[in-house]
Length: 559
Image (tube, rainbow, N blue to C red; front, side):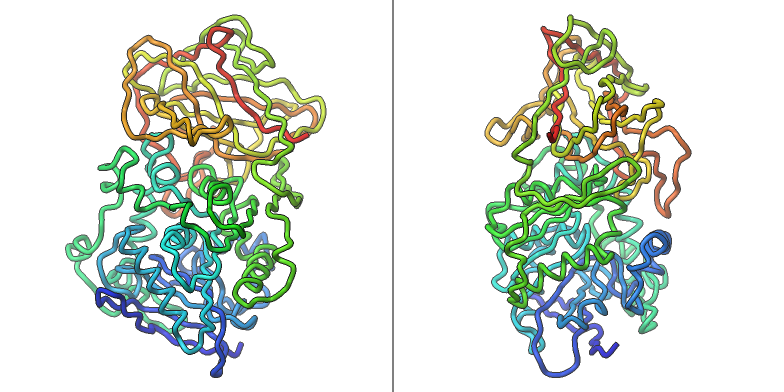
């Protein structure tokens, strides 16, 4: 392909630090709209070499990903320049401060890093090959920082496509329901520290230029450690939702740019909640929500995903009257067992026609029923199997699409307890049906979490279908006393065939599907991927049900 490439272009920031950018553009002197990404994964590290397992899975199942491109310039979680330059775009990849070929102090999601992205947007807009309209596009990290940058309102940011990106640093990334997530401690050493600026051969080489992906200088380990934040330790120092987390989160009142928010049904634990919250709460008057399934890197690169992104950016960056502004605001890949999907357009989220259906837990026979039954209790050990409540088999095909919530009346033998709520699907033979998550191939359809001492609600921001906990103080339990917990369960979608049934498991630890674990390069998957938690052990939890304590599950049933 005929493409002008400028490697390691200097981008000088307001504090004098110089970041390094690769610029891919059509040859000649014309100006083009810009697709920009800025992050810590090393712009020179190829997808195929940096993440060979994921690449193999994707192109094996979706050959259209690799067709029509040499894939020489393909990198993890950002666009393939060959797909965009030929369509009249300039693609800019920038290694963020302290990562890849950019020097500096590595501090992920920090206010300084967000300011850097703001300045990179304005830098790109001012270049002679730019038409002044900049769009942000990318997966995960490259989506998370889009919400942050949009909150700063860069003048030349014209549109964003945030593909499966968390938006609330506390609730989406570090603490689920107040329970510490181990994800940052698993992910950061394997995917960020590995390509920190100065790691040398450990960070790999660009297969195109042959240069070290992490810059020409090789630094000793002690200096590398001084040049980065200990991200997991930093998060553990902030167990409540304080200013530290707020300045690393989206400010929805200031996100006014046109946006396409792409979520994943399988993104329980990181890659879905923020996208739904963005669509519901962002101040933008031009916003669209899409939700799909499968691995979180797949549809960003398939023809389906590329077409969505291109039509969106063609409209807002090129000014094309291509009908995008008349597209339905919500596009769902409705999920069925076997990870089969059907495309359906909607107008809003949650869906206005939702028949909110409350099923009540009955501890007497461990079922989910239409009305509260006689008072009963069931207890479980925090480290044990928990307790499962079974809904009747559905008599006809039944769709559940939207956010869920559980109301649980519990007591603990200790002054606290962690409650993990898992919504599961079983076939007519009684076998559990698993689904491909963003990473883990054996996930349930929905999960929710709450540390009981974080049970306080914000009445202004809570909805029946999405309780909101401020997480601003700790209210210990009195052993043996009964407390009502409102548990947020992240959105889901499933069409249950006749004869299938739902079950709700309440337990004190992460979901484990019970089969052989799946080994990835840097973690082991047992049903919750790397989104696992440091949960409270050693206590006994009692679930109280019935008319005196109407514990329940709220389901979004679609007629």
